[in-house]
Length: 161
Image (tube, rainbow, N blue to C red; front, side, top):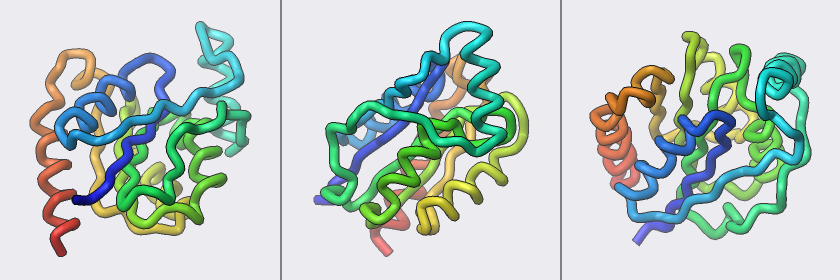
């Protein structure tokens, strides 16, 4: 049995909702990355965009699950100002040596997921087994399950290879 971990950061709760569904369907462990910097409200939103644009790292709370103990780590991020969220950039930078296999998902308002996935691939130094991109609207309206199921189906097909 393959050991899978879903790791995510969520400022507004949308990425968390998707991560929860993926973890539930795969019956695997889940870990939320906690940013030590306050990202709440308008000031938090603005600092999030600025930090993401500058490709800054941030302080994150100590993780509970060591990624090296998992066969696959699925990493989820919201897109901030056309970039990976700062907490996930930090996580990928800190733990890239520990990943065996990765898959990525993102929630977005804009259309920069290709760039973000490329950045995640470069940071993790791994080619993802599968990618999932969802708009904030799809998540808010609960219109994302079909895409999540396709993502998991693609993952399972890649795992078997």
